[in-house]
Length: 268
Image (tube, rainbow, N blue to C red; front, side, top):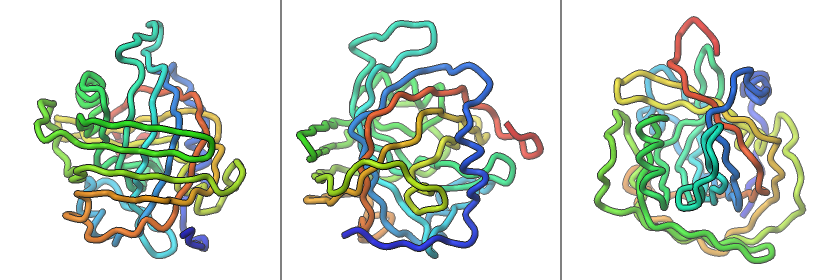
């Protein structure tokens, strides 16, 4: 299952490392990410380029762009200086993502969609962070070295509109098992290129590009072997997908920083 991927000559390794530095500003929110899975499939770069803002360039590795399917569990969510609210602070999430770069702000993540099992969280994320969240029924289960993820996006979505194309995920079931021991990704490797990304881009309702950073310790990763991969809906946009690369990640605590408007001549 696991595909050997050599390094490209052109990834912006300096930019990736630079974005790992904790911003000097104060975080606006804290979260814990648990039971993460990174599934990736090759997708033609031109297909993904048509789905991202013109200010961004889709990055490639080993001659391909990569589509990520990333389910996990979010916990302990709370804004700075506010307590954890039990009914809002934990839910399952799945994001569909690809990897982009900006000439000033550097490499980051572009989310084609994010599904979450808490409607209020979806609404806040769309309104405040301009992220294309969808409400759905999602669940995550883990036992020893095995993890299972199931989800179903609801058809009716009473959420703020955003001016960007989104992934047409319908429903899914994924079961994986851990195959190797935990380790940190080495710099200038495919695993580092996929996982060690601390900047995201989004498009607001006003049509303006924004960027935000997160900060957390480096991921502890392990190679995973999928036992079941049933993902429906994405084939409408991307054709048949082969998820050829799978990684699990340990839980970690995350600091989230406020999004800013992207200025073409002024780095953040």
